[in-house]
Image (tube, one colour):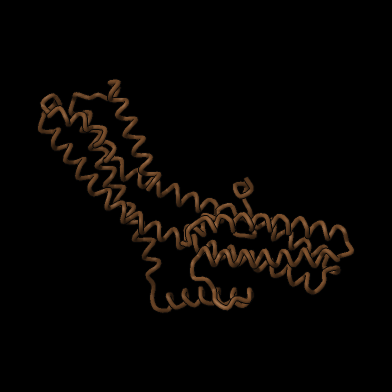
Length: 302
């Protein structure tokens, strides 16, 4: 909403400025009618397409009893497995708190690995483990700070992990396991395996929260688009009708109506501004969470 509001204010200011200098001052009805007619037609198409996509996406969430049961059991099994592996009595229900718990558990395992490897005889093993644990703990600390500053909802959890990609850490763990297999103690090998599981659990949670967020955003956007789009269409059509009564010239209109042209144009662009805001948010989230934990992309590394 903030992005859409800022875009509309910028459009209003820009159009008003252009009209004041005479660049967009129009006295012929045909010019404005063509512009407003195109906006009306475009908004109708936009609203129709968005609502159709919304129905298509949401219809996938409306399944039979077996599908709903499988989904609920899948989430429940995942939470229960994480609870057992992290020795938690009760799992947090808020997405941000759940993710923070996973990250803290991962950090504890990284600290444990570092502490165990301090007694290793191989200096290369110590350096590889130290590089891994330092990089991992620094990143986790940064994400936890972001989580503490954000809200506890789905977007708060998701936004805090947009820069998160643990492909390099997973590969580093695997290299240590393969290269120093004979030198790893039982506790060290177990801690490394726990790090791998925790990282995968973090990515599973993040991808699930992304699905929840996109569905939530699409539902919210469809509702807001109707609230904004229908009044915008009414105002634009009313302006067209008012101008059509003046014939081919706008000189017969009340003096205030031509001055309202920037406002009418801004209102007509409101549905498009809402779409712009929605696409920016969803595309940003999708771009930064597109890679699973085992892979990385140039965008993830930048």
